Length: 411
Image (tube, rainbow, N blue to C red; front, side, top):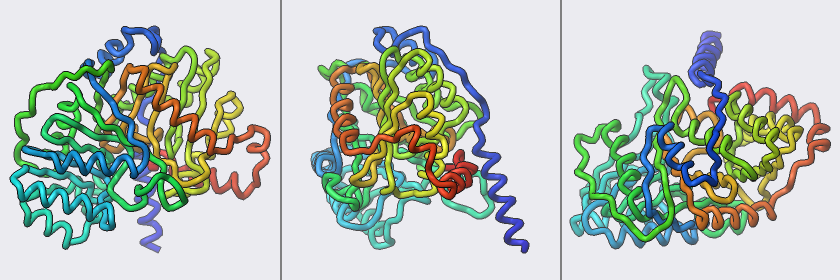
């Protein structure tokens, strides 16, 4: 019986830790399409506006992995890589081989891996370190530090020679291979970025490098302007007792909408702050469409928790679509066709309050257009939920959703 009591105590402690500490009711007098909006947001989240960045949208493993591997092959001085997931398999072994080859030709390689999410074999770790790759494990799991164990790095960053960066939803595992052609190949998006903000991407890596035990960070390269048209903000978040800057960015972006909000996220778990933001947006007449994963998901309890909140959104007139072909892992929000929010954060409490995340917001009509095209393509492969039909689902389904919703702020 003692273990049962202990389990209840642990669960209660985790739920207390994860609770939304503050309810924010955020309005924006500046519209997303206003040229002042990036500066307005930057001043409130404590970031800088970078100008002249260029984005390439990489869709699924068939586009993502070749671009990343090619950048590693071209590395001359330094590679900084951080990921929540790095597993053995065809993908992991391909990256391990390229990291080893780069290290052997004299490139300095530093890697940060989450101690919970990354599952590299000892042979792979030995191959990397023997070649000279430095690896640090973020937040090692220890039985005496319960609260700290709940905090993970969910960032996914690759920066090569300070000149090109990658971030998005893709980790190093075989289920990201291919082109989302079947249930075993995930649908996801990553981004190749050049310009001034690459320096900020690498800075986010070195924050966690030092936290994970790295002893020093190099002097980063000067910002590199390009001929890109974007005005960008880079944010990285850490566990906080208040509202993270990433969460505030999302709330400000929703508040700045004057026409439309399109969101893609595998998980959709709302707290009081985001619920208020959506309700106000609908009252302003904003069209809100959400594409999320369906029955094919990597975490069914999280799906149940997400679904518990759908009815309220549907009753407000929010359009919800569940993607059918495979797991949909894209993280993107497009506001009024001009403002995009991308990166590693899901639309849930774990990303907004608990994880270390990396988020990029950009005023760039070309990026927004590319993301909208992908959104429409994914929406065409999804089932739209009907408010009346959804209300009449079985009592068993509702009970299951209510149960898992109790843990929603942990997910």
